[in-house]
Amino acid sequence: MIAQDIDRDRRREERESARLPGFGPGMWLILLARILVVCWSGMVLSEDVQALDPVAVAKLSFLNLKQDAAEAAAAGKTLMVMFEQEHCSYCIEMRRVNLTDPEAAGIIRKHFDLVALDILGDREMTTISGTSMAEKQYARAVKVQFTPMTVFFAPDGAEIFRMAGYYKPTTFKSVLRYVAEKHYRHETFSEYQRRTAPDSSAESLQDEPFFVATNDLKDALAKAARRGKGLALLFERRRCPGCDELHGQTFKDRRLVDTLTGTFDVVRLDILGTRQMRHIDEAAIKESRIAEDMDIRYSPTIVFLDQRGGEIFRLDSYRKPEHFGTVLRYLSTGAYLRHSSFQEWLRAEKLSARP
Image (cartoon, rainbow, N blue to C red):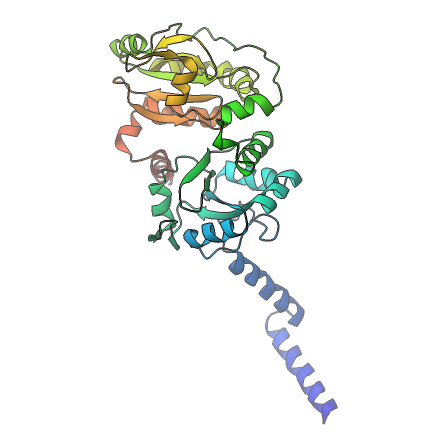
């Protein structure tokens, strides 16, 4: 009887396999396993973005950040939330390069609980404060302009630090160590970078012919406004590899420079400088204090001001020249006045470009 039962089961399996050529019992098991992995991780945003490895760097989260923050604190870790979106080249770079870097992955496993969110996602989630909303609503609430955006949270929900956009592995690991070792308690990230970042080829700030030389930002703003322009404040520091790239690539593109200077007058400031200046509010303070007051965390950072001195946009992450150009188009065309955010404008642009 046992032999007959086995033979009967074997024939049934053969009949089932024959219905779908190429999918025998073994293949169905493999397919089922793959489906379970995808559903279990809950983090696949698109075919173009590789799934986070749930073992190596990501926590299995039920999208309850309040619970995640408490669990991270209990384990002596910090909650690290990474905002992404489909077809985001910098998100792909983050996953394929930064999160697979052995040193970075080791720091994350030891010191952080990483949760990934989709800024366009409809999944229901709970914020650290206990409020329920969709992922995309939460992304707007925390003012995500660029992806990937990485935000570090304290157990009480206070934001410790944010990395707005993509940074290359060296800077990314520097941010991880800055937060993990709690250097934010006694120094800014710029100060920490100054102590720890590798030197660049430039020992001094690099000048550009289109920089406006001034010690008076209020006067510079007034002069720009009379010409129908805003004011762009470029914050840099010495021995800054990112600044080297900005000057060596973006500022070598004549069309980008023409668009930039056609819309804004550009004033460069030293994040750690001691030069005495008059701020837009007429206060006489040092360059470094201006950077501190404006919460400048990275170099280079460009803060774009309208003709009245109000901040309209901030570019404080690594951007390739072509993406820098996209930001300039958003600003120079006045699109920022018609759209609620840079991301909303990008989505509208993509929809209008469809045939």
